[in-house]
Image 1: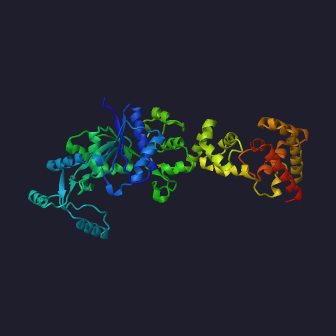
Image 2: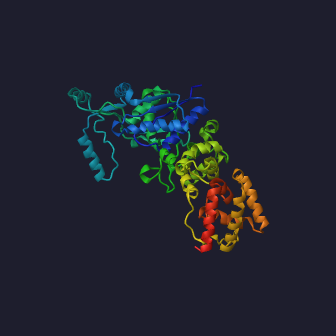
Image 3: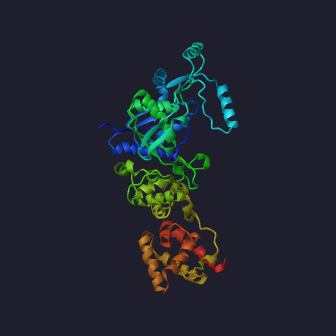
Length: 478
């Protein structure tokens, strides 16, 4: 059986699109599931659009995600001597031709077609030049490109694993450029040559390339080469129904990580954008995806990049983390914000239950720095059955009790038992004691933890100071 070989072939011309990352992921998973090889090829023939930083983004992203390539990276710019002979062979075979049209002529053609509301397409001006004229132009050293000679009649048919049998009228195919005037191959041409030379068996790419596939297949047929298995992936749409686009404000992989999403959650989420495991399961590690992924599970329907779903999934990943790992993840944020005065492990334990993004950490740390300015009307809470008088009484009772606890016994367990017993002894519901305490400690209705957890983290001195201040505030009626 022929070895399965897939390739990720990005052009280093910008940021890492979510669609690009999904393609890389699926190609990797197909190779792993079928016991094959995953190749990295950098398609850098479009020299005018190269962005130096984007190459580093490709390497960094694959490394972060855990996608390891078996071969490469190969650079098309380092393989230029390979492509021209193939283009010239196509000319000899009668399936390509020299085109000497100047930029000025093509610009004028484009203008004329725009005025008549036509899509720009080459008019085959050089398609049938005589051998004498061609040789004369070459002898003069006129600049030229080599164009693929498309058949004018009939249709090209190919099979795609996801979309089935596709038929395209050959009359719709433009005579595309294969070799540019600077000697560089075009993306479409180099793509086919390299896929053949690298023995690529499965070509995975977005469904927007379906219309280009007949051009590729005609090249394969011209050379008498085997055609690879095509797997075209469905579009990924944003929540407004548009194709994901940086121009429309949609995020790249780097953007998502900077916003506080975990790499593992993003990859899990992206894997499900166009693939169904065949059951209700939603959570997969990369290793589990390698085992579970199937080509048959790829859908032809567009997928929606649901940011709400991703955020929920990220929160679930955070809650499933080992506490030590979570502390390592957010510990620096806590220390940078609060210093070393408070136990960051205890704070992390609280936050792990409450945040969905790592960037939300700072927004929960304010209560550990100071009490927010608040009105004593907040002590009126129907559900907790409290008002200012009940709150004042509860705070005084708590203060008297907390002062008596030895410093070395100031633990969450002791505080819990002490305060719950205090409520029982004074015929108070737990909320009538703990709600005023939490408000006194934070000044807010929402906080990352309950009163007992907060007292434990703030410590005896700071907690008593805040409760005293709250009692004064209530007595003044502020």
